[in-house]
Length: 393
Image (cartoon, rainbow, N blue to C red; front, top):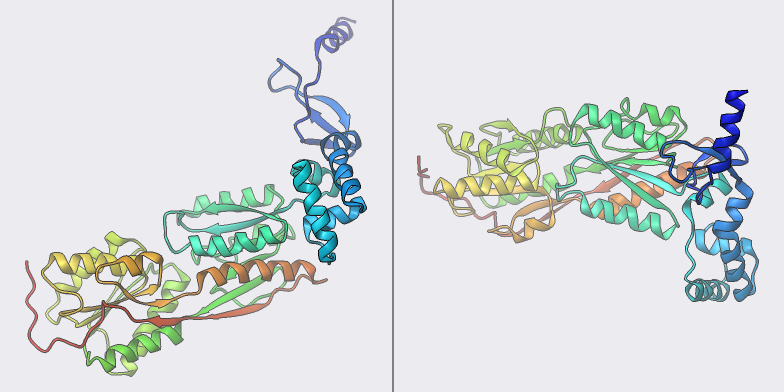
């Protein structure tokens, strides 16, 4: 009796505030009682939530445009072809009413999120902004949002990212860092979420692969320095546990060796400026100093150029330097960096298109895609110096 009396008393003073959009079970939503943090009571039926949060305004848009609710939805979500005249009428009405989609209400109504995931290694790395721009632009044009996750090259953080993406009920995920392999993404595919990887294994069910064809750009870069008269080279590659770094190192070493420029040393480093500087100091300590240094990415190359300058070695008069990626800062480097360009914005676009295609296929089978690289010649490469090189200690 006391318990029943206490429950009746609590119900007398507990009044729900506006709904939070969380779902308790089919047909019901959760609302948080005012003044009772952390507690929930059963609130309004989902149908009523939908009507209060989006239906009324959407009806006004439809009425003003002279179309059905379904047509408004198709225009806003780009789900079917709509004539240009109808699309303009709907969008004019949307602007007039300052209408915006309620994401939570839409998810309640459809049972699906409007979210796609994008996994990168490091937000501070200038390699990724163009990929993000291409991926996000294509997603937004299709009426979707993007959840960007950052692994920081850390395995435990990567596991947490995979869990977060699954909990967020994303429709698909593009993983554009080679530090994440197919096994680490298995939690997503096991949940039926399609994944696109870069430079990974061949595609399969729920898995697509975008391969960046580095050999074309690397071969052009090697031929470029051969034409400049270089015969002694060095390679500063990326991390040994990174698929792309290993692919680039193999292509550089085999290509240089085939043209008579077998590297005097092949060093590893991380993808940061300070690592490039440390590696090039080791290069300069060797008995035989190369006349051209190939670097695993542009950040390594810029660190190498800085350390060369500190050692009294001029770029490109004494030593030529070549990077990979063609990030924005490569053009701003002094001297501007000769580099192998990677079409990163196109990579972002292709990754989203690959996910969309998988989602539309009945068996959700992924495909393999290829992006080609090219050489961008700037001021960090020059004809080989014939005089002996002296290095400051």
